[in-house]
Amino acid sequence: MIQWSYGVWVRFFYLGLALFLLLFITWPFLVSHQLPATPFLLVPCVVSAGIAWHGFRLKRVDLIGHKTLRVSDGFRTIDVSVENVREITQFVWLRDRPITIHFHNTTAFGDRVTFLPDDWQWFRFAFWKEDRIVNDFRAAVGLPRKAV
Picture 1 (cartoon, helix red, strand yellow):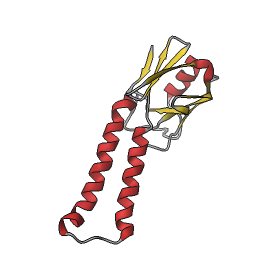
Picture 2 (cartoon, rainbow, N blue to C red):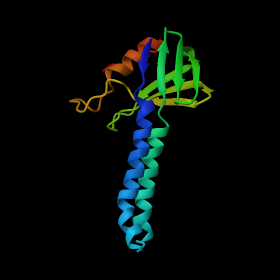
Picture 3 (cartoon, one colour):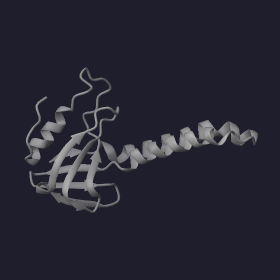
Picture 4 (cartoon, rainbow, N blue to C red):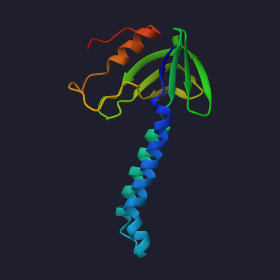
């Protein structure tokens, strides 16, 4: 069984970070009872909502054997056949480097699932390249590997 469980608990970290940033930026204005200009208050709200959205879309993905993907959001779990996997991509320009599995048919979580790999590193020399685990995952589900 191959397992990528990093994304389940980190979603709560992102929510906490979003709330902390929102309160940290707006607290002086709430205490002094002076409301700032609307754009100044709108920016932390939009940034906090974006951070929370990034965290809550993450799932946990387990590869059981070479036939089934078990996908969980922490509340419900579904099993998806690996034949349903159309493509596996990684967004390399974010520090978290989320991996997205695209499906042929829509599942209970939609037509794609995003998770974070367990082998996360603070620094990469070739930050523009996909992680090795993406090609390993492609091979495990039967998709062709990409040249690195």
